[in-house]
Length: 401
Image (tube, rainbow, N blue to C red):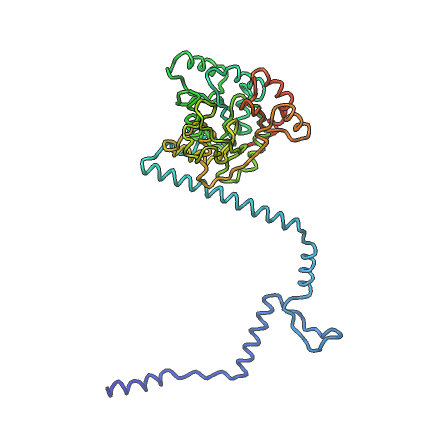
């Protein structure tokens, strides 16, 4: 204990205490640091005498008069339109980001489905032809004259069809399955027609009017596995379409995730047997006299890629109602989907679509509600195209996908 107490004084002697700074030295050091900081920031101005009428005394301006004048000019020159444009650009950026997040979520769902054995067809891998829109025209074995009437009007033939796909990103195909007897006479007739026109999309599906819900499901799954498109359209073969206008309408929603475009309706649920559009499962929609939920009419509608992928992944467990447009609406009603009611997709035939064209509002699609398509479409399609068509220039002037 004594030895330890004797060492402590010796160590204190080896480290003499520093001399404290005087108050004057501290003041000079602080003042010097202050003025050096002002010089480095470029904010110091010359000490100026007070203006007349002031309370006297000198002042140090932290912001120069030139800075204040510059700010004042910026405020005067600022344009409200610039602010709105900036807000619009920000809104578009947010929508684009939301679209990207939606795509990533869908890809994540695909990977999870793969790891768990999967439900249906998975989202296609990268490397597929990238296009803007796939237009699938629903057709049947007995509808060759209808198909020819479209090829003579709004569906391009041969090299023009390939050019439209390659340069504009617009794919057009007649969609058909196979007969109950594969490789039978009906299938061979389609083989011959396909060899000549090269404009079919063949599905692994047995054709039949009461199987349209299944065909729609399979079509979206096959399309999303064949083309990497922003939109997938289903249209009947007795509807007139202006491809340029259709593409321009869909382009408005390119950055919108999970979008469902069509003429939205809510028709009555028909429980009486024997009537057209009878709904065998009418009890699921509530009491007699109720209406369906809002959905796009079946003549033509479009869905974005993420929704087509959703249908592809989950197709084995998607319930099919009697009517395919109701089925599609049911598949999407419980999702975070933006329903777009676009009346340009359901114009009536002349004079309606003709008047709208003359007024500068060309229709994207036209048909007769009374016939759920164009009445006697084979005989009338050319006249309707002449009266309501947008002209070949509209398609050739489309921006590249």
